[in-house]
Length: 370
Image 1 (tube, helix red, strand yellow):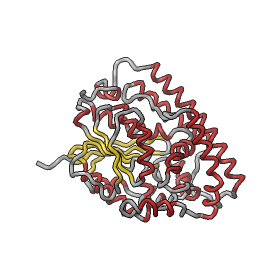
Image 2 (spheres, rainbow, N blue to C red; image 1 turned 90 degrees about the vertical axis):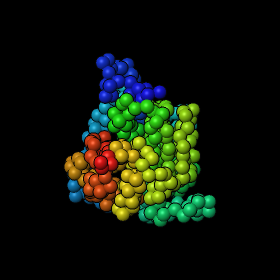
Image 3 (cartoon, rainbow, N blue to C red; image 1 turned 120 degrees about the vertical axis):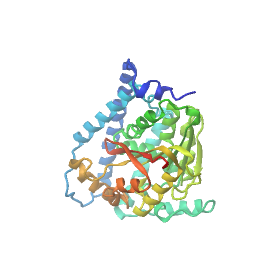
Image 4 (cartoon, one colour; image 1 turned 60 degrees about the vertical axis):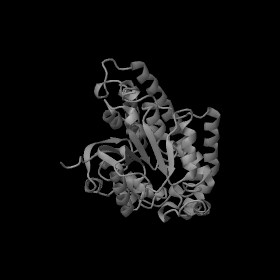
């Protein structure tokens, strides 16, 4: 099975006749999804305001209004539908669970809101510690920077309840565009895969979380050798559920600072929304590990938050984000020099694009000299 399935049927990711019906269906689904989650976002914000006083913080930089955000999100969703029409990757399958299960998770998110708002008011990010104690009874000690309640969510990243709510929380935060932001990373993978035999290509998703991106890659490349690693057993179990009836990926409990994979063993490494939750020095250790695992000429696809200056009129939003959400390393991330950090490990620039509130950075590992 040479790399010419849905994500690579055509030379260079294009074909003569675009799938207009596929584009229309994907766009319609994206628009409906955005309308649904935008409404939930508005409802969640209103309930939060009734439970607490807003944080006293005034950004010093410009902040986009809601319509500007939604307009940019709509542009991303259209680009996502156009990529499906061009055959770069298959349609998304975000709501693989039943509508009843989806509504249960939404209900659980609203039920958890009072506790989350209370922790936000108290600036208390410690609910994860009990769960961390249980986990470390079975595994090596977790790093201190990981054992805190990112976003003030109950249980941090270590409980079954957190894993169950994570996707609906993130989609609500991003007006239903989180899946499309992730799928933007499929484009460089599709271009890299042109002419390659999927069976001979290996990909590792570092900090795979609930496995949403792994399932996207699996649908696009059914024969690729896929691995996901994460520091949360609860999230790895959720990733197994999300793979559903798809061919399984290997899921490994591992710290990204010391990945248990051989040097130059991977053709592709992906890392999505991890670095903004790492201390600056740890980002560099993880980058070194990623470069170590990649084969010469291998592909690194990085997706994370916008940084200061990427969209200057949105910089105030980046200022405000860590005030509303517990993101202790976010401020250092939005001013970090990713270019120098990646180049220092031999990861050469191969493109970059903005995708709503995220950016996709593409790098290739330098070929061996001589």
